[in-house]
Image (cartoon, rainbow, N blue to C red; front, side, top):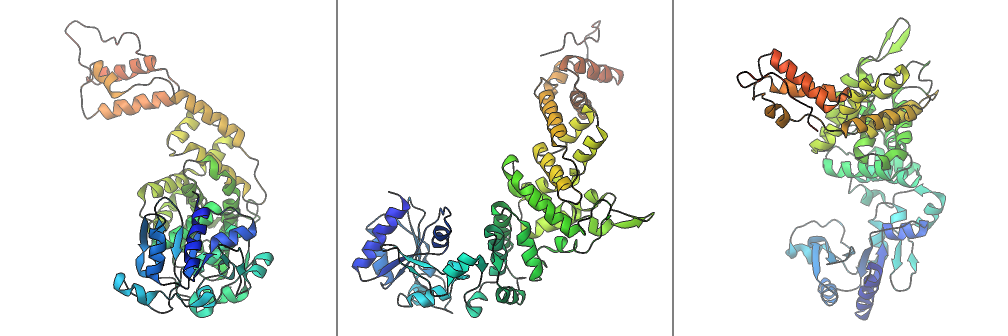
Length: 462
């Protein structure tokens, strides 16, 4: 049985007791827009909590995921089943349950507590009739994001970020009154996990992620969560190379250029975060030299800023390392292509990258996200990446090879392994490379051999 069929069974059980079940929130909005929606949220009116529990118990295994707020799930389904809540009541535990929910609140009051008019639509599960107290259908048709109620909207400051996220995801404009309201809401006390969730949705689900950041900028809400990006506003660039304007403008263009590459990288979120942060270093190192603006070493000087940004939003060390690695190396691919660097050089570049494919994609987006657009170097870089991967697929020297050839553990053992890796990147086959490493070890007196045995490793191992 699928979620929709189960929703109808729940609605029939509720109706038998004199209540009504409505589809609410995103699933109604997405159906009106002709979009697929994976989540189905149901709101039940007109029956008591214990009656709803009996209905659910008769249909499956009930799980009270938000019992104090009247929210349930059924095992094996992704449905969220809720009851309307009474405004202004807070509490925890089952003793507060009856006080928090209000089965007789009515659809108007329930919809009034929603964030935006497009999310305040309610669809009767059994009849399909849509209840639209706040003109959400009209706003959807116009592509306008508008808050429902001033007072209830302020109850959750995260809605400021949700406004920007929805504007980016759906390509909607934000109503002027909604932007004004958001501008006056304090977002400093939000948990970082909730802010990061909205950033992630904007980056991964938007055709133009720049809309998210531009909307927050208009609301004056880049601070404090996105302060490193805010600091790029007004930072000048050479008009000869960046006729598009300041660093902020270039960054927003790069973000939108990077978005289509999300499916080609190992970590789409990290990739888009790196696109957002790749030039934050320009805010601290841009200077005029000889009548020309320069931002020398911004890819390195920006690393502490990018790390500060990441640490403010997340504790995921692997994600942060991925982002910083891309920021550090983002200038190298286009430089290598312009200089037509050697295979050995590009091998080193890819070897130092946590995701060479993402590094190429970021470099291409960086070159395209500007005026004038640079010629794309993707073909050259992909050819070099294929060469690097071919070399790395060959047999190579491992620690056990050196040990078997008579090199004991020593402080220089790591140096020999590093030399072996350098030879590997240069394309030297395993056998000749091993002979070179052993020759170095013999020169340093670090290779054991039996009395009378010549220092000859024999044929290169496969």
